[in-house]
Figure 1 (cartoon, rainbow, N blue to C red):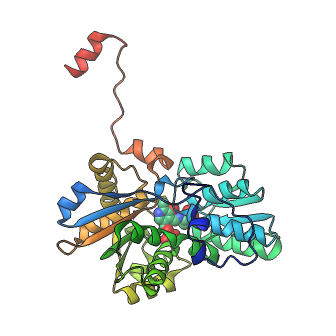
Figure 2 (tube, protein in one colour):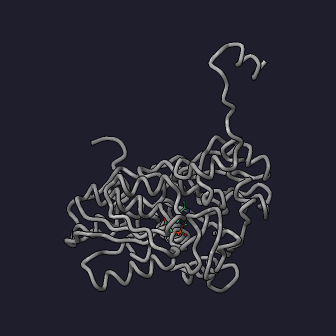
Figure 3 (tube, rainbow, N blue to C red):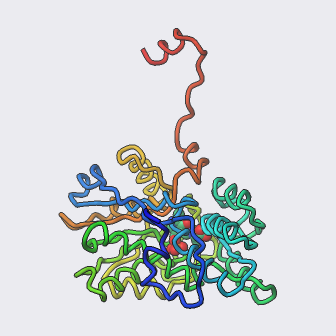
Length: 345
Ligand code: F0G
């Protein structure tokens, strides 16, 4: 077979695949690394966008899910479960369907983007909207696995982190080196952990001579790592990262320490400015949480001439409500040439 075969097949040597015979894949990965011309000009740097919204279910979660569901299936699991702000649930539902497994997802009622909810439902998952937030959903998903035969596929499942490390591999494979800075939104802190693992594994294997500084960005109203304490009621327009007590908090701190990086906060307005800028000037429609990585660069700046990669974690189509709410509604006009000339002439 020629062409891209999905992450596990392409990077097989970087995984522990003992006991695995079939890969559950939707040919995820191999996403574009786009040079961002206008952003580079604005920041006097060389900025690239890793557009993860082009994965099969529209987010980076597919990288972790192909490995998590492949392994779960190899171990004979029949049902997977997750708590989610939306993207994990969409990916879990998609890969479980592919593997002919059951899937249960717990999402915060009313706080998940419409497209993500639609995905989980149409892929056939059992979707339960809990009257609570993500942190509660994740805790309940964990507890349920003590009572029911279900495998958890949140990023506390180590196979998820393993799969997601391939984002870093792809960046180095395309750039021919590691960037000086990797900028990434932080919610539950699984992805920043995974990218760092990817870069360090490649570095140890001498695939890249240097390592990036890891810059994570949280939304101001949901910035427990920045504030140094859990947030009971996190709030942000970027619902994907509306998380008050990240599961991988400690490893995120280790990543910051080891990479000489930082985790800082950006406001919802800064996130939306970056979101608009990316669509308008770079033609990349990402979801608000993803734009936090660019908002952070615009807010704090970068060293002149630095090579920077921003991870744009999810597709803008997932959250049509936010897109429409922050734009003016299109004019409705009569279906006549005169009416159109009146509008445009
Ligand atoms: N960006 C998007 C679009 C996300 O969906 C998430 C997390 C993140 C960034 C943050 O990644 O949690 O690894 O730090 N979404 C999870 C979910 C929580 O349930 O879909 P993280």
